[in-house]
Image 1 (cartoon, rainbow, N blue to C red):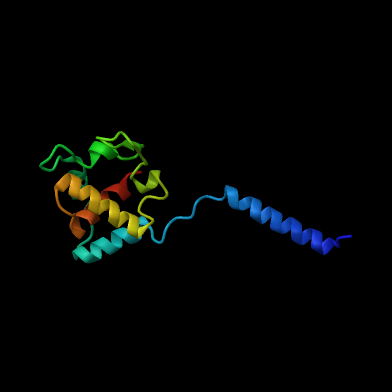
Image 2 (cartoon, one colour; image 1 turned 30 degrees about the vertical axis):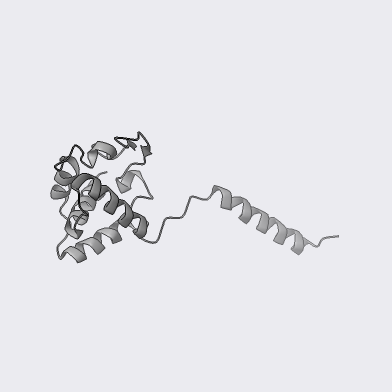
Length: 137
């Protein structure tokens, strides 16, 4: 016969394990604000939201802008311009996971800047775009 203590321990463990399945996914290793601070420091100047909006919405030499896939404003799900694949909202206020993984943010900025600008973005451009995105509420 199990003792009350054993039953309570089993119950507590069962509740804890059951809660794991319903817990929200943990964010990555950073925050959007920390990313903005990092890129601003690398650029030697704070991100400029107005410049970021211009960069985000303007076609840059080719046929695409950031808004081509992420939408304007990027507060709703977007869709990749050539594949049609769904893209989560980019603005952190509308997507709690946006810019919370430093490696992922670096990867996607590198890839998307090459698509839109035909080169990698500078730290200043990343800071500007992220300043714009953080200001969307």
